[in-house]
Each structure stands twice: as C-alpha cells, then as structure tokens.
Length: 311
Image 1 (tube, rainbow, N blue to C red):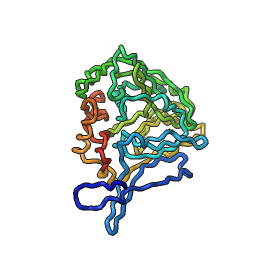
Image 2: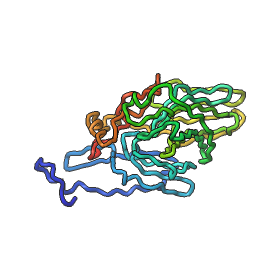
Image 3: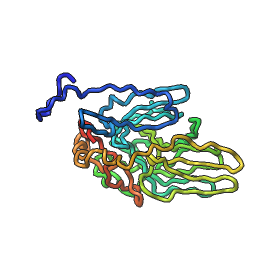
Image 4: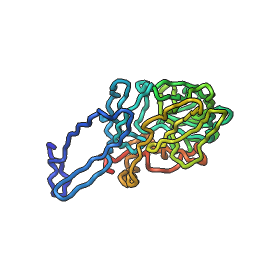
C-alpha cells in the first residue's frame, strides 16, 4: 500500500493490500458470505469481510439463466455476499436514498381457506410515506423459474405513529397494508416473497423476513398443503405449495447458515452506534418486534459498520 498507512504505533503496514479472484463456476443456485483470512508469521486471524464502500456493490452478472450478485448486504451488517439465483426481479427499478435496508413487519400472517393474508407494514428508510407521496404496495411471488406473480396490496394508515417511535424526521403514517393472495391459483412449488414499495420519490423491492421466533402458518386443503418457512441465513419467507398428486422439486439453496461464532465477527455495538452519525437522522433498528411489528425492536444487526469496516 502506497503511501503506507501510519497508525502511530510503530508498526509497518506497507504490505496490507490484497487482490482476490472468485471463480463463479459451480456457484449456480448457491449463496455465500465472504470471509478474509490474514497470516503474518505466526499470527493469524479470520473475519467476515465487511465494508461500507458502496463502490464494491457490482452490477448484476448473468451466467445463462443465473443472476449473480456480489454486494455488501445492509441487512447483515454490510458483510460481503455472493448470491446466484434464477430471478425475474428487475433490480434496476430500485431507487433508495440510503444503503440501509428497508423495513418489513407484520401484525398478522395467516393461511386459511387457501388464502394467504398479511396485515403488515413496510417502508423505505429515510423516505416519507404519507398520502401525498402516493404509496403503492404489492407482494411479488417468484417461483423457481424466476416467474413472478404480482399481487397488489391495499395501502392504509398505520395505527401508531411510526416516526415518533423511531425518532426520525421522516413521517411514515401511510406505511401499512393489507394483503390477500388466492393460493389455489398457484402451481405447486416454492415461491420467494418480495415486498414492492413505491412512492413518488423512491422504490424498493426486497424479500419479506422475520428475525423473531414465531409460529408460521400452514394449511392442508384436499391434496394441497400450503406453508410459510424461513431461510436459514437471512430469515426470509418462502411460500411452499405441495400437492400429494403432483411431484414438485423443492426450491434449492435456501440456507446460507453462518457458524455459531458469526455474531462475534460483527462490529461492537458502540462502533455501530458511532457510524449512525453519518445518517441524516438517528433511527432505531430496522428489525420489527414480534409482538408489535409497528414498533421496531432494538438490535445491532442492521447498523452500518465503522469506517474501516472492522468486525
């Protein structure tokens, strides 16, 4: 590294740069998070690769039917991830004022009479969502082939003042919605679930998630069974539909489980809180609470890393 970094501790840091080539062959349908291992003589350390440099989020790459993303995931403390999927989601439509993740939460998610219903909330961080902003909500159900079924949701006013609870200047009175999908009209298979939020100034499309431990809905109607499951790595919702009279392959690459020690690699809480000074307005965590999803619970998972990306 030229010029060599000087931390004032008397050590030579002139050889700390590196280059890495990641072969994409064999990554189809898989999801990875990146770690870096450093050795210097007898000393060594391995940490998750975390960065707040937006320049490292490269454009989607395409390998045949597969879309490959290499990006710092804001919902996982900006750790670098490599994800290969068949997807029909057009990420070029996303327009956000901040890299911080958008928020989803639900009061009710249920399956009854072959209908999926959600009483939920969703908003794009650091944006206004009020009637005058013309909010538009829909949920996208994406099957294994990347084919998308778009189901419109009914936007509504929230029962509590989310802005006051989050201590933000961005009012989000109209950030709630009701959703119903007729599951009997869908073919058997596995469906990723995305929330598509749009206003006159911003738009985001992101997967529904739930970080809390909760009972997930399931129903059997005749030969068909409907249930919601969660991915292991990101706690994202998957809608599974099976039919005992039809053979259907399950969705692949649902898990990207981190080792038990993964949380120890995240930045200390005080460093994460310090990084919030770069935001226009301090806010609470982006993870909703289970009992009252309209009141995001305190957590450290979605804060930005410190400037040097240390974990």
